Image 1 (cartoon, rainbow, N blue to C red):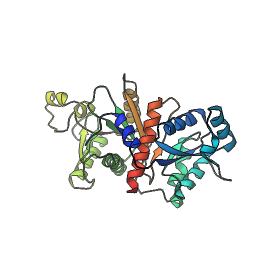
Image 2: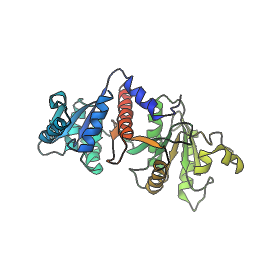
Image 3: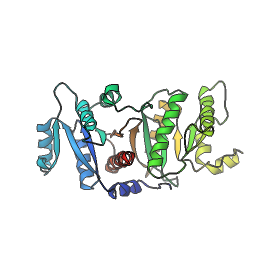
Image 4: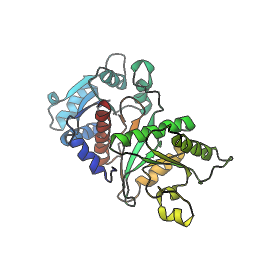
Length: 305
């Protein structure tokens, strides 16, 4: 199985037997409230709104919503909204976490605290799904937003996080390209050596059911025709599911290039913790915000089974 559009993720979420509950850390923000209400209207999630309860109720009332129809939780004394949202998850009241009016570092702080029990031992990473006008299916990029300079062990975790997401979505054997500026190992370019090491780890059975190729350049990963012209023999060229970037700079550049393509849309979540985490931008289109919540809800629900 493979997914071709983000609408398939939305439909998958709508057809789920039970809606997942999302703890929204710092919900008293216009863009956050609007995103949550849209998800509620599309029957994707049930929210718990954490933060300044008076302000949240006022914002709901201004939008002609009954505050009594929502679970609203005041930030616990001595805590940040993120701390309180994580407490709700620990208590089993919510299945995943969403960023509201808090900084990303503030949101992740209680997630990585050992005593909260949300760590899995894996590196935290950003997993983004792109629907692109020139590609025949959804394309995952990782890690473009969390780990700045991952070493080979962290890159292994980053691959495992992406592969787990695809397995949960129904993929049998995801194909992973470890991107570098060239397709041959070079002692002067340590990223190429790490990429080949990751390929060998996969061949040795250390990454479960997936295929990892590296090092490989972006053009050879994305185009079978380009691979043929350059006499590069890879059965997955033009058909990879996941692109792994060497560092956060390359990932940020790649992500922004893809996002600005005409008709390109994306959704994403943060993986590596026991629960999915949604980071939505104020500038994100409505469909992106919706699909992010739908994706995280699916991942949370299928992990529980």
